[in-house]
Image 1 (spheres, rainbow over the protein chains, first blue to last red):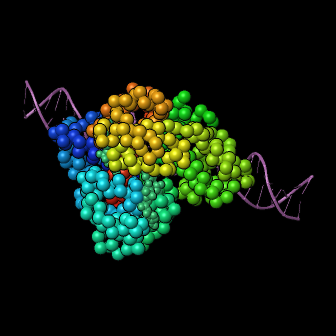
Image 2 (spheres, rainbow over the protein chains, first blue to last red):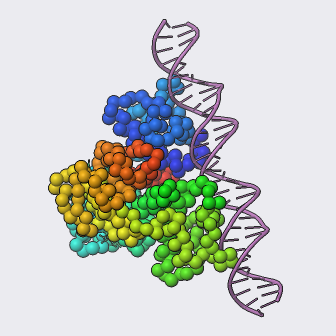
Image 3 (cartoon, each protein chain N blue to C red):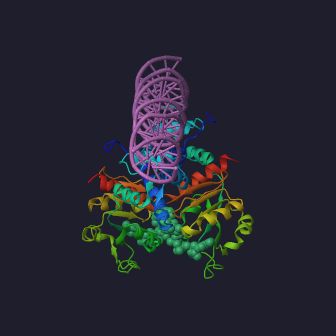
Length: 210
Length: 210
DNA sequence: TCGGCAATGTGAATTATATCACATTTTCGT
DNA sequence: ACGAAAATGTGATATAATTCACATTGCCGA
Ligand SMILES: NC(=O)c1ccc[n+]([C@@H]2O[C@H](COP(=O)([O-])OP(=O)(O)OC[C@H]3O[C@@H](n4cnc5c(N)ncnc54)[C@H](O)[C@@H]3O)[C@@H](O)[C@H]2O)c1
Ligand SMILES: NC(=O)c1ccc[n+]([C@@H]2O[C@H](COP(=O)([O-])OP(=O)(O)OC[C@H]3O[C@@H](n4cnc5c(N)ncnc54)[C@H](O)[C@@H]3O)[C@@H](O)[C@H]2O)c1
């Protein structure tokens, strides 16, 4: 079972399960059935069991899943039982909002470096103590701070260029907020966040149903 | 063909095609083959033709697609040949960054209302001229300003509550940035944006490949 | 100790999505 | 005017993901 190809959708759902389970922990739920968890997450119960079955057997038949254990197991699967150092490239509108946001650290994501080209921003100290570096120092600082993922929040026109530099600096995980498709070698994994695509999808549904 | 069930994935890809085509227009490309467009968008050429075939015949055999025409056609499909009025609920960190962002208006999305509960924010005028209202006035203002979609950027704990109010105010399209699964009636379409899920997915890929 | 219950884990069936492969249609050069 | 070239549109095929349905397993109470 361990060596089957894992659907991407499964990985994304595991994140959602994990987050839901963490909320349940705070409400002192300690055992949960796939049925109840499924309802909470808006998926089919068999889906949850199948998703987990790719990685092993984590439940107790007739009982359900121990919430705390399952959170740990999912974290193991996803590689989240360790901190991940992040770099932000582009400390503008969106970049700053993300840097200020407290949720990342709660999930083990730590901004340890930030870069910009604007002289007004370079040298500034961020609320989390990180100092904004000039993008010229990208490779050096990324290695020094042991950064493993880069978040691109520069203008779209710069995104590909920044991606290239990140890859050269040894980064192989990128979260791209610029609304362009960036090209990287196979060793590097890119995820895109594009809000307007989501808005378009809502527009389609509202138009189609009227 | 018109009445086949359209895959969600098709709709999302149409947005990507459209954006890529719009870039090409700026570079004065006026005809494009599915093959070249596919390469640019990182998909299979047959995929593009199939996606479009759900809605009609837009190309010229032996030639390709007229870029400008295809943009118009896709906009028609998605319902984007008209403006969409948006409301932002929660004018914090993220909400403000989005409100300041110029890309939305370029795609026909117009923020016409904004809401918060913080007395320091209510009454303030935003860069786009919109005044922040108290959330108590949600329904009234949403009707007055003819808002059709709501963006939720409040703390997660408030998200469901806000969603309920939006539905009551007649909204049936919601873009939710809070990291919780919100429940709405079938008439309402919800899309979620959750950055940490994307980070988790990157973490998984980096862990799995090492 | 044992039988019934409850909920998992999973092969099989179904549904959805993507790709192939080619007949069709248009353009263009001679 | 015609034949070759190019690229669409689409039925058939392949692949992937989801859901069903039930045998299996561990728990609990009598
Ligand atoms: N702000 C939003 O709400 C929002 C929403 C969706 C998408 N986006 C996308 O996110 C990106 C950033 O948006 P924004 O609103 O923060 O823009 P912004 O202009 O406020 O910020 C961009 C920052 O990048 C810096 N920069 C420019 N070139 C750079 C380079 N080569 N290296 C490093 N830094 C560089 C600029 O100095 C600036 O600080 C854009 O691609 C935008 O389309 C933003
Ligand atoms: N900031 C980010 O980069 C980021 C990233 C990912 C997810 N998110 C999510 O987006 C949401 C907002 O994040 P943020 O960083 O902007 O938080 P924030 O605290 O800066 O902003 C939240 C705003 O919502 C307002 N608010 C609270 N209750 C409200 C209510 N009932 N009605 C209307 N307004 C209300 C607050 O007054 C505040 O202005 C959160 O759910 C967060 O998890 C944010």
